[in-house]
Image (cartoon, rainbow, N blue to C red):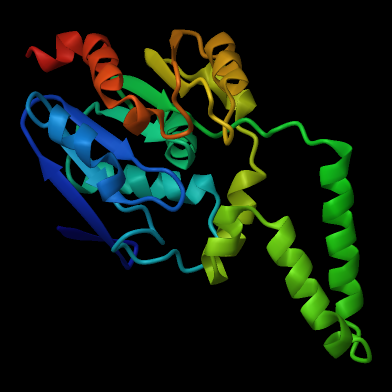
Length: 255
């Protein structure tokens, strides 16, 4: 199904009956990423999964967006469909949106899965690479050196960028840069909804330490770490994941 929000075609899937829950996927993912979770929850809840702008079948944003713009769009999605007091589940990048959404929308519960939102502490080597790249980029703008440095700049860019950065292009690449540099730490103490934090113990993208910090800062939060699971902990340990969220949503799923 599609819905038009701010001239953007947004693809979504809705099924089931009961309390409302919205699933927000991570960067580079789409509706299908949460498919097994969606299919499980639809037996007891009204479940909404959507392709965020720039992913799956949804239109890309018209310009570089940060999480505030993504959050505003999801809020409009909620209002357009008349979704009341939803449960929000966000994975990784979707967790960033879920955190912001919890501050501006009335939500029933919050589930953050290997969530992004805490800016990582960088080592000196990282900053040296970044500044070297920026210097090379500035030098490459000089007309006399443009052709000489073009291939060198492209080579450095490929080596320095993350896999997500390399796979993104155009407006989504600049959006990624904007998003990953946002630090939402100061927003966490403002979350009022009961919050379940789910993490893979071997998560390399958003380490367990991020989840531990979120547990400390969010007033009503509990952290569950899944053994032998990575950044996609909900897929790595699907059965355990479903059992734990079922316990967290027990009162909601029995209505």
